[in-house]
Length: 338
Image 1 (cartoon, rainbow, N blue to C red):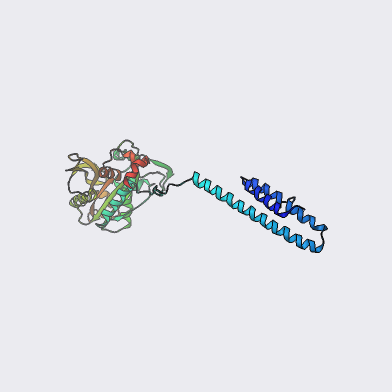
Image 2 (tube, one colour; image 1 turned 30 degrees about the vertical axis):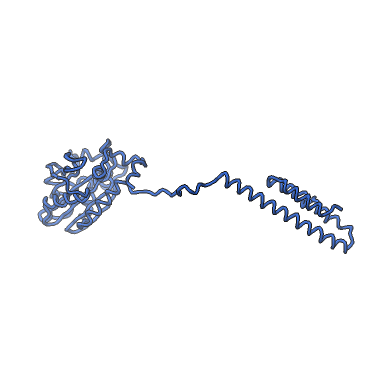
């Protein structure tokens, strides 16, 4: 019968020579497998007496435990060697700064939107929101813009394939003025509200987009004059641009929903944009017909309205020359405003 010490030493050498897990398992089978050396010794004990079985069995089991200990030790060594190889090939330079997750930022037009709301809220204006798919009456007729009126031509552009209760197709709103009508018909004077939101017109170049953002303002009460319009809007511009170094002029114009009407121009008196007049808004006293469509008596209630493009305000605030940059999604541009 083969000496157990020789089997243990042979196993030790075989395990040490194994260089892969598969080779180690093959070596294990030579000693501990179904046909292995120690398994064969256990099977050969059938011819021994009872006393010899007990003594020889104890010796074989002890040898088996030693071989299993050698096997497990070699497995641990191979695992450590594999870990060391990985650590050497996948080394991390702990002197490098950590990799942080990128953080998002607020879009510059949204920054302007939020800033406009904040300024007007401080002087008592509410903020109204409404549908971007409107009906013809709120979009045009209620604003003194009846069908076939020439002033509708630049705004009567985008429509969806749906109709209102009168059978007219529903337009995408070209301005947020419909919210002035909706709000005024739901509230009693005094009415002080701004309506920021997305609007749509067929127009596209460096300073125009078919989808853009606008904020409109409305103040209706018994004694609101054009002087109040000038005071409110000039104060808004100075607070928005954080400077008193600007001049504002109200240039006579025409809008069907206001009378009298004025374009609002501004000019910086210092800095790189000094000395250039820039059109920034439309405004005027609300037309009596529009006040009547608010459900109010135009003999008693008067007020003013204005409308400003949020992209235009943003371009002037940050010195941006091309409106299309706002919609291209170029991170090199947008990350400047984080």
